[in-house]
Image 1: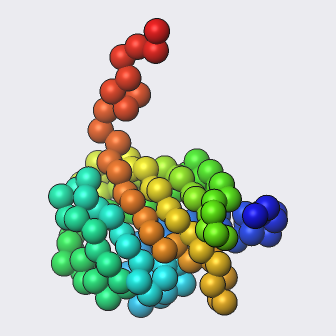
Image 2 (image 1 turned 90 degrees about the horizontal axis):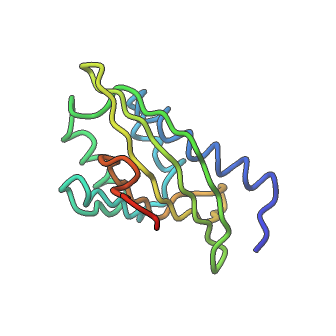
Length: 138
């Protein structure tokens, strides 16, 4: 499946919309970003996989002040995958209330829906080691 420029722009805006909605506390609008049965993998943070929008909203509310106050996304790479799905990788920066910053990698599976593109699966991986631990390539 070849992705059109319009598809790529819509998917990039979808990825960006997540941070705006979460930072503004508009969790009731997450259906604009995710499928109803989204799988949100937080295993790297010891929280397992959250399944479905109600559980995702509940997990966000339960984290409370532990949530970043600002989410920034960058380095969006979009690749067509099998069965009309799209693979999207991006980098995220989260700013905490104390001013510290953390970095993550988002690995998303995006699917076409009647209302546009939606994220069906997201894996969030913490970036904790420079070069992902690579010491030598020779």
